[in-house]
Length: 213
Image (cartoon, rainbow, N blue to C red; front, side, top):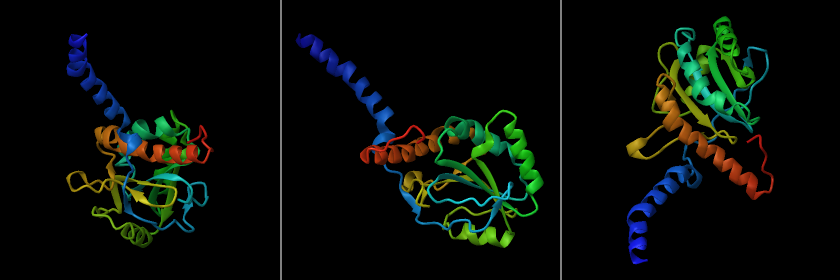
């Protein structure tokens, strides 16, 4: 009997503990706020001429820049690693801020994605270069837009318009690089799961849990 207990403690218990913490890390962590209460989009319009808002939506926010077709691989990476997995959630949207004049290029991206994906959760909105600069500046991020008003990073924004990420000095992360599929599959997916858990826990606490979220 004692021998079995010793074997359990030495071999089985560490494995159980590892599996518990590995699978439960997102369930017991709150993703920090990098920038609280960022601005909404105002009257910026999408490809369909619709007004898009950050309010009451979990948003993956990106900035395409003028070279949207040149960087189209980034959108396909994001689509494959994150969007296709979670696009069934009605409270989730993917929004890309684009300079005016890139509408045709954005439409080509949407059409390409639409060949194998339900693109109803993708929104490309358009603004002037100055409006994009002002909007990005109020995010108060360490990273900057490039000379084409774009970045390969995307950002997680919660339903209250708080931009979320990691604040620890060792692993500070305000955005997730869509150029690297591994970063989307690891860091971004982990952090995104935390956001989903937060809202699921809140809904459950209020006895209002739904399958949509």
